[in-house]
Amino acid sequence: MNERETLRINEKGHLEIGGADCVELAKEFSTPLYVFDEAYIRKMMRVYRDTIEREYGGNGLVLYASKAFSCEAMYAIAREEGIGTDVVSGGELYTAIKVGFPPERIYMHGNNKLPSEICDALDHRIGCIVVDSASEADLIDEEAGRRGMVQDVILRINPGVEAHTHAFVQTATPDSKFGFSIHDGSAERMIAYLLTKKHLRLLGYHSHIGSQIFEKGSFVLAVEKNLAFAAQIKQKYAFEPEVLNMGGGFGIWYTDEDRKITAEEYGEYLSALIDAVKRGCTLHGLRLPRILIEPGRSIVGEAGITLYTVGAIKEIKGVRKYIAVDGGMFDNPRYCLYQSKYTAVLANRAAEPPTELVSIAGKCCESGDLIGVNMNLPAAKTGDILAVLSTGAYNYSMASNYNRNLIPPAILVNEGKAEYIVKPQTYEDLVRNDVLPPRLRR
Ligand code: LLP
View (cartoon, rainbow, N blue to C red):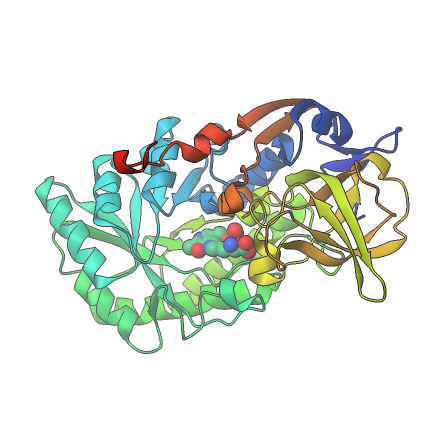
C-alpha cells in the first residue's frame, strides 16, 4: 500500500482513515460505506486557495468541481474554506443554495443546460454561467432581459490539447461535445456573437482539457494556446478577457502505476499554470486576468475510501479467484465504465503482505460488475473488511440503484470522530416515487 496522508495502519494492524479505525467504522455504520477524511479535503482546498493568494495576489478563485462528490456537507465545507463551486445541473445548484453557498461564488457549466436550469441560475443570481452553445446564449440573454439583468458569462473554448487520459474523460480533442474550437473559427464566431448580446457580459474564456491528467505540460500548453487566442481576439474585436478559467483535471493516486502527489505538489501544479499565465500575458501584451481553476478529483478523490464486507469467494482453477463484496457497480461504476484501476486493502488485516492476485466482484446480476481485476491481497476470508482506496471522487456521485441495491451512506471522519453526511437509503426510499395505478392494485 502506498502510504497516504490520510491513511495509516494502527497498532491492531487495522487500516485507519483520518484517525478512525476502519474496522470500528464498519461495525458502527455497517457496509458498504463511503468514508471521507475532512482534514484531507480542507487541506486540498487550502493548498489551491493559498497558492492563488501567495503567487497571484489573490486575484482568482478556486471552484470545487462538485460533480466529483456533491452533497450538502461538501458545499458547506467549500463555503467555510472561502472557495467557490462549479455546478453542472439544477440538482447541484439546488444543493449548494440549500446550504447557503454564496451565489456569487457559483459557476454553472453544462453542454446542454435546460431552460429551467438557466432560469434557476438567474433567479439565484449566481456569479457566472459558462456558455457552451449559441442557443444557450440566446436563452440566457432573453431570460436575463426579462429579469432586467445583465448576466456575467464566460465562453467555453476548446484549445485542442490532447491529454494522456482515458478517451471518455478527454474533453479538448477536435471531436468533443464541449466548447468551441479555437482552430476552426467557431470560438471566434461565438465571441463576436456574445458581444452583440445586450444582457450578457462576456468576462473571458474557459477551457478544460480532461481529467486524471499528470502532465503539467498539457495544462501549460492549454494556457499558452488560450492566451495566444485571446491576443488575436483582442486585436480584432478590442475584447480582452478579464477572467481565464483553466478547468480541472489534475490526476490522483489510484495504484502504484500513478504518481503519488502530495498536497504541496498540487500547489506546484497550480504555480506552473500561474507562471504560464504571467508569461503568456507579458508575451502577448494582455493584462493579467482573474484566474479560476476547477479541481474536483484532486480535492476529494484520495480523501475517500469505500468499505465493504467480503462475502462469497470463488476460485475457478487456472482462471481467476473472485472475491465478492456487498457493493459493486451500483456504488462504483468506474471499472465498468473506464476499466479504472484501484488499490484494495483488507482493513482488518492491513499489515499482512499481499499473497494473491484476485478479482473483486460486486453483487449485481451482471458478469461485468467488477470493482477491479488482478488486485493484490492477502488470502481474503468471508467476513473480512475490504477497503478500496481513492474512491472519494466520481463514486457516490455516479452511484445508482441498479438491481434495487441501496446506495451506501457516506460518513465524514474528523480527528477520529465520524458522522453521517449522507444517511443510509431504505427500501422505502426505493419505492418512494413508484406509482401503482389503481387498476393494478389488488
Ligand atoms: N471542470 C470541468 C468543466 C469538467 O468537465 C470537469 C470534469 C472538472 C472541472 C473537474 O475535473 P477533475 O478535477 O475532477 O478531474 N466520471 C469521470 C470523470 C469525469 C470528469 C468530468 N469533468 C471519472 O470517473 O473519471
